[in-house]
Length: 56
Image 1: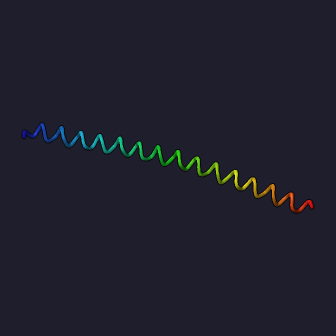
Image 2 (image 1 turned 60 degrees about the vertical axis):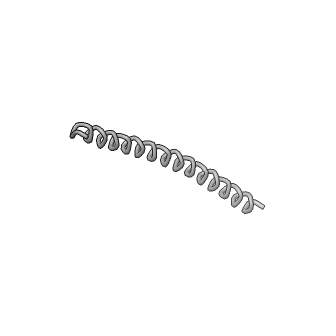
Image 3 (image 1 turned 45 degrees about the vertical axis):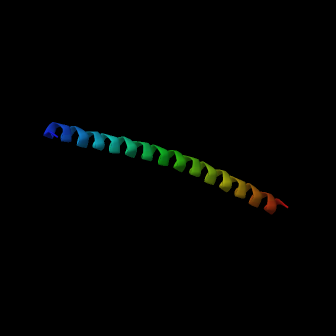
């Protein structure tokens, strides 16, 4: 193997790792957004239930 081939293999691996990192961050952000939305919905539901119980 020549030095150039080794360089190409290593740079390809680095680019692959970078792309996988971007994909991982993207998936994490999507899950975080969804989780935050679910928490907000649950908080609103609890607030409504507390307000309704106080009215009675």
